[in-house]
Length: 287
Image (cartoon, rainbow, N blue to C red):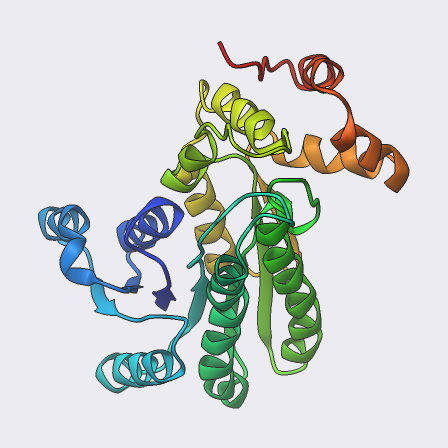
């Protein structure tokens, strides 16, 4: 059984991953900014007798990551796997989204993952074994308004993961990218919120798209199971799309030229809604 660190474990995919790995018999270090607030997770761990340990870590702070991982390894030995899951999302047009929000996204989703990678890689490289799983998104390959800033952070993590995979493989360390589609999490639910004040229609349209998709929700447990399979297996596969919409959406975008993609995002409402209904069987119209 492995010793595994999962960041952003208080809810959503991180919570599901910590529980799934714990139920599989692994020792899990479930990190989050405020463990005291994760009462439901703590109760589940206690009820099921899982070897899941909650600890505080803020991936946006250098010392929090360095000290947190050092404490975990001092108490439990070296880590066998790292799951970089911690992430946040702010959405809006590039013009309107405040730079403070864009910086926050990059600090958590990109630099946060890099901080954790740099903390665990020396030990993994020295032992010539280990596994690093970076949770990105379909948005790590496809950039759509109003998720441009979020996509930028995931594009960046995908690029770093490709380079890391080449470096780490020389020392027996595996790197995998997990790309969830629309998963039923609080983050996805937040995208469904109405946006009436922007001159850009994209937040409203994507809110309807997410709302329609979440009528038939995909559980974060599906992502967690994929992560478990990666950690427990020996796959050399780099990218792992997850969810019924992930691979179809990636293939749909790949079949378009860049100009066709821009035209799709710039289409007037009725044309855009009709396209979504035709291609995905989803009625994204509000009301």
